[in-house]
Image (cartoon, rainbow, N blue to C red; front, side):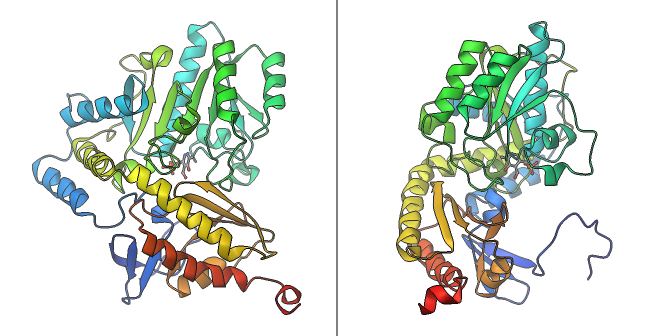
Length: 397
Ligand code: PLP
């Protein structure tokens, strides 16, 4: 087996997994790992969850796909469920986060044209991550991801993250803005949590200006931060919400949910997806929601997340390498002062799967079923590895 015929777009780690159970993964040689990254925030119910397996196998045996030229009852049911959960009205289903954001961008542009704005602009943030398609790559706020793919799209205005003055300045200077697109907590950008009240201030500005507030909750949603959407923690009602990742617990599905002025902008022929919202994906997502709600995994994520952050704060206190521990629920970032290029592989060698984003932020996105015992094991595995990064003078002095 070799990767000779795969494109080189991933710097893959040299490990392959054979099976999983709950928060644990087992590689092809039988070694077990605590999965603190959960397929990059996808496996909210962990691996091989019985209810998910049953939904997939049951539906696969009945009907996988028909296409959106016919009614799909499970899609209608899922739309009703998600709109009720988010206070929005209508849903469009697709297969990934980037596609959900593409739909949101197209809605914002339609909304602008309805208001006779010929070149509608969407405000996007520095450090944001919205996907890898050309529009979402343009909306993404890191040059590294964009370099080499120019020309990027027009129609986006970049704003410094967490900077209301800069935003106000854009609002004063431009009359072609139609929307703000924002992650309530920046994920890929380094688990960056904005100042309290930031999201509410964005909502107020959008209301004043008649702009749409688009919350990309692809990483923060599905109860990861404790509430179904992270924006709910600030009592903010977005106009458009995008979800993907945890929605299908690994079966590809994304959605763009819209309310009020944005809910009915798509007319037949304006947007679509062959696979989007097929019976298999929708039945799976319904099963995922059933378990998340029945087991109150949002409240659980909030409690275990706090336990984990407090324990990390306690055990990492005094280490000069650790700049900050932050996050909400089970979306946690540990920012180091220096990059630690070997940390991911060292952790893996010790049976722990983590991720490092924005060069020096250890990112933890474990399944929401993580229990206190597993959170303790996570700390016990990770803390000594971070302590080992301390410069010699710190540990001997
Ligand atoms: N938006 C956010 C906030 C994300 O974290 C991601 C993926 O990491 C995306 C969009 C893109 O999702 P996908 O990789 O499913 O296209």
